[in-house]
Structures are given as structure tokens and as C-alpha cells.
Length: 270
Image 1 (cartoon, rainbow, N blue to C red):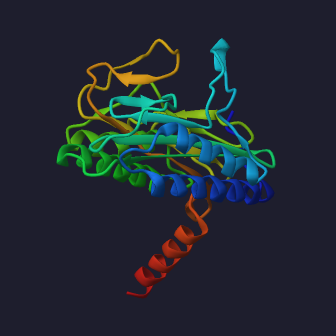
Image 2: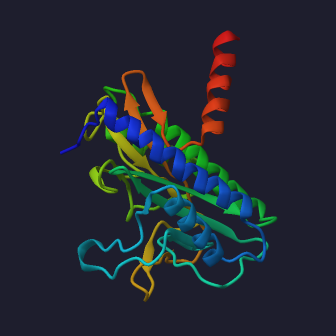
């Protein structure tokens, strides 16, 4: 069952969404050749705890898996999701996918992005760009009366138009008091199918695209997911509330919300 959120619930989700967005943007500004994912993880966890939040990933253990030990999922190059933080320095030309979630006042905010480390190859830069564009297109489907299948189709058609693989083993999801709630939201599908979208639903949308095959496998640590052909992958995620007027991105900083509001005002006035 998909759990609709009340106005009070959404107020709390806006707060945790802004917090995790601030963490994401702080880490984005730190990424350069030579930094380690362990350093980034320490900063992320401190920011969350200093704000009174719990790093949602720490200790997460679905289905009898070993508990996840880090505040962020740190995935490099061919690692799709759920990578472990290490003391290995990031190198020029890498791409770094960071996925993170915080729980505050009983609600979860979840976000991810892929960041270039220094200068990266043009084909990899295109992958990162199209993954972010796919997320934007997924968000544009989040209007009352649309269907979950419309979201997957928006991602799939844009990704495949550019020749990228769409990871099928991992999906977006509903979110609220729990990190993973109904429905599952694949990044592929047929328009007009699946559950009807209603005001009050909150989704974590997260396209994962690859330079090659969409097939994945999990490494011996039991968590890190890599592309089977070891080609690069990118990941982008926002937590999005569906209002009667359409989508509201919850995982933006206050400054990003201000800029978005100004941009929409300029568009309306043009």
C-alpha cells in the first residue's frame, strides 16, 4: 500500500530533505583528485549527527544482509550503488557516485548524485549529464493522475535514445517514515501502467545508467554493485513530493529552492 503523507508529514520531510541536500552539496564541493571516500563519509556523518539526524544507511540490514557500515554509499566508476568508503584516493578521470539518506523527526530524506573527479572523458561526461536529465524527466511525470509506469518510461526512452543501459536490478521507491516504502519505481516501463499517482505520495526517484550493458553483479563484500562488463555507471536521485499542483523536490538546499523559484518566476513573466 502506498502511504500518502499529511501536510504535517510533508513539513517534516522538507526539513530533512534540505538537510541531506546540504550534506550532498558540501561533499560535492570537496570532491577533487586525492580526496578519499572515507574523508567524505566522515564529513557526511558529522553533518547529519550535528543536525540531530541519524545516518539512515548506518546499520541498514535488509533481508538478513550484513549491516551497511557507512553514512554514504560511495561508488566509483563501474560501481553502480552501495559501494564502501575506502582510504583509496580518488583519481583524475574518475566519477564518484554518492548516495545518502538521513532520518530526522521520524522521516527520511534520500538523495544521490554522480560527480566528476577533475577532468573526465567526454563520453563519461555525457553519461553523467544524461543520467541527471533522466531524473529531471522522471520528476516531470509526478502529477496527480499520471501513472508510475510513466516515470519509468520517461527515464528509459531518454537513456536508450542516447545509447545507455538502464539498470533493472535496482529501482526508485516510495519514502517517508521508512527509507523504502511502496511502490517500487523501475527506471523502465510502459506509459499509462502501474499505480496511479496521487497528491500526498512521496517518491525517491533514482535513475542508474551505464555506458554498456545494464547487467550487474554484487562483489564479495555483499553490498557493492558493479556493472558486469565493468563499464562506467552514473546515479542521480531526489526525494519528490507529489502535490495537487505537481512535483516538489524536497532534496534541494534553501539556496537551490530560491534559485528555482526565481527561475520559475522569470519563466512565468516571459
